[in-house]
Image (cartoon, rainbow, N blue to C red; front, side):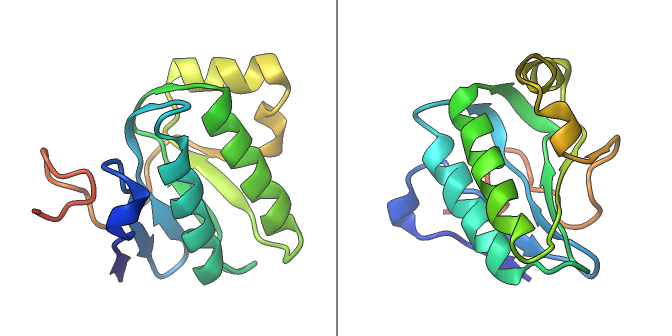
Length: 132
């Protein structure tokens, strides 16, 4: 199941995919102060479908840049997820994101997967894989 965020979320909407063993979100491009709201919304929606047996997995393979706004969204989501025993995982983070996590001491807070989760891969040109 792919859940499409509302148009009010902005032009950078991020789809939420409920997979068999995880809830995946797949942001792309730069996640900064202008686009972090879309990440927060997708993470909130993902938590609604997640559980201890179904972690939230953030596919970072298409993220080219991540600033403190995005890190704040990830950390806040991790705290909320902990209340229900749910894990937030990062998949395929690039060097810049790994460095940000390392410099802030947050790297140990997230399990890191080398490969993105299987499932829907958005086609080029459509951030959420769906034509407008």
